[in-house]
Image (cartoon, rainbow, N blue to C red; front, side):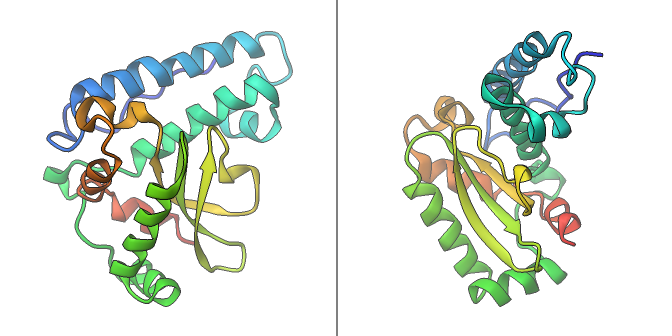
Length: 195
C-alpha cells in the first residue's frame, strides 16, 4: 500500500504568528507531499513498496532515500512543534532539563549552542538534539536529507534549515526563524523521546 502524507498534528494556522498557515501549506501540503508522491513512484513494485517509512529510510539508497528521509525528517519536525496557545515554547522541565544542564551547563547554554550550530550550518539541512546510545545528550547538524535514524542515535528535537521552513515568514533571516522556533518547541514530546 503506498505511503500517505500524515496530517499535521494541529491546524495549518495553529502555529501563527510564529509560522504562518502559508508556510505550512508550502512546507507540508506541497513539498512534503511531493516527497511522499515521488517516493511512492520510485518504490512501486519493489520490495520496499509496502514498508513503513522508517524502514524505507534505513534501507533505501539514492533518490528513494532522499525522498524517504525528507518525509520522515519533516514528520518528526512537525511533532517537535506545538502551538504556543496550547503550551508550546517555554522551558524544558524534569529529566530533560536535567540532561540538558548536565551536558551543556544549563538550558540557556544549550539554546546558545543549538542556535550557533543552526546559524553556522551552510545551506539546507537540519539541526538535531540527540541522545547517544550511552545516554549522553548531543547536538548534530545534517546536510540535505541526512537523518540520525540511519545510525545509533535517538533524535529528540529537530529544526528544519530548509528555506521553505521559514522564507515566506522571515525571508532570509534565519535568526528570526530560530526565535520563532523556541516559541513553538513541544518540550513534552522531546522529553517523552528520552530513553
